[in-house]
Length: 179
Image (cartoon, rainbow, N blue to C red):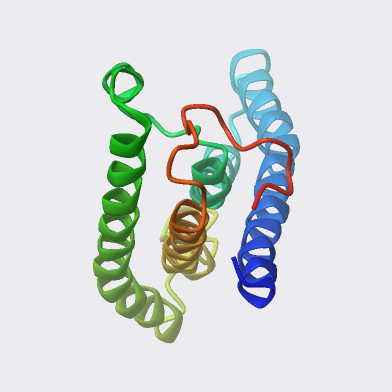
């Protein structure tokens, strides 16, 4: 792989790794909020107006922003048993078909999610609950995560394209800086 392309691929993966860890930190907010909500509801019969809603609003970005780096780690569900039975060249061929399909799917999702996020921002959309927080920032997490997933899939496609065609690819990438 040319050095400039390698740096770009590594940069995409590094950005997604950072966002993966930032998303993981959201659980340090969600868990205490849920604990507080459960204790206040069941121990004191005084549920909060904001606890469940905050947890829900934070769980969306947590789930979405973890996906692109999970693709790099090969943590998504796939047909592992079928792929392990195939020769390495078939595995590589499947990867070279799979990533453009992912990118196409992401492009379709981006086309449909971006206008909804912009519209939500223009109207300063809120949840209309008793707490009534803005939800437009969470709606922007969808197109952002879809774009990051498409970029990571393109990076993985390039990794496969420039990899030795006879290399066995059933294991997750070795180390964080795998190219």
